[in-house]
Image (tube, rainbow, N blue to C red; front, side, top):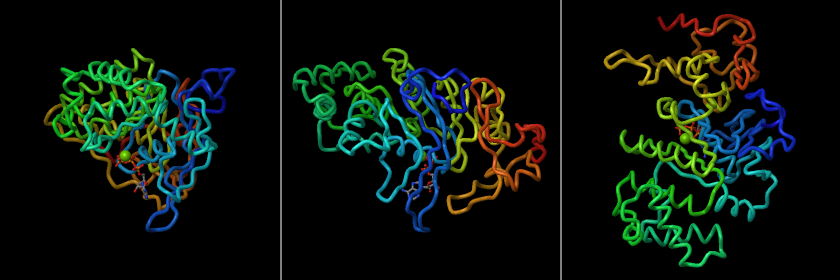
Length: 349
Ligand SMILES: Nc1ncnc2c1ncn2[C@@H]1O[C@H](COP(=O)(O)OP(=O)(O)OP(=O)(O)O)[C@@H](O)[C@H]1O
Ligand SMILES: [Mg+2]
């Protein structure tokens, strides 16, 4: 646990930030866009302890992918990142490019939504796994890398891994491809795995299997996992903690079960009400009216005020800061400061 972070109330460790797999503190991201330089992430603060699974949740455009890309310094040219980012004990914003490439090849690996983005269509699966292993550890012999690759293919549930090594990516299904991409990350011996909507492109059954695989890898290898998703149902059983993002800000963070059973931010509450899993079949799905402010808009008060079922006058003019609301939990809502009930839901009835 890291001193100064809000979402957990545990005592800071003597080593501070270095104990965590990832620390994002007051991170601001500005990207060049068609409308000029725009602030995409505003003062985002959260951490991922070693061996923890943390989900970044929020609607499309809330800044989940940008946060992940900032953590790995994979943002497009012209991007500006301020604040503090400590990944696997390394100060990402101060690292030379070469070391950063090493970190991404070995210790901190990224799995995209679309497995084809990570696989070379013209190279055999085995060759790609061997390359990944040997880039991470150049001292590894070709034979040892092949042996490791086969072992990891078996581990992620690929049948007949030895013969699969000779296949090309187009010869396997989408679910199998995503398993292969995870194996490609595993052969590098990572400590942190970033998964950006890793199952969105897959059917429901395959999705559940991949999530189960991630959970197993987390338990067996102590792998820390950061998973971005807009679907709360996906992560309710998987993530230890939840970081809810809205319009480029962290609005709520805390242990998943607590956040889901008793949200402390009206956005989390609305998001839960709109999740298919919270409804009986045939029941009308609640939708959150309106849309979030885009990066070019900068409301004076709370970014969620225009859509909030519990909005108060003060919310339109005062920007809420994340503050502790319970042990290990934070929320950026003025209602938590005593302005009124959190789940009034007046517009929703
Ligand atoms: N390269 C870029 N250039 C300009 N704007 C960008 C770029 N990448 C993201 N954005 C903007 O930043 C905001 C956050 O986008 P981001 O992709 O991080 O959201 P997200 O939460 O991952 O959404 P989704 O669920 O759709 O993947 C959006 O308004 C998006 O339009
Ligand atoms: Mg995204």
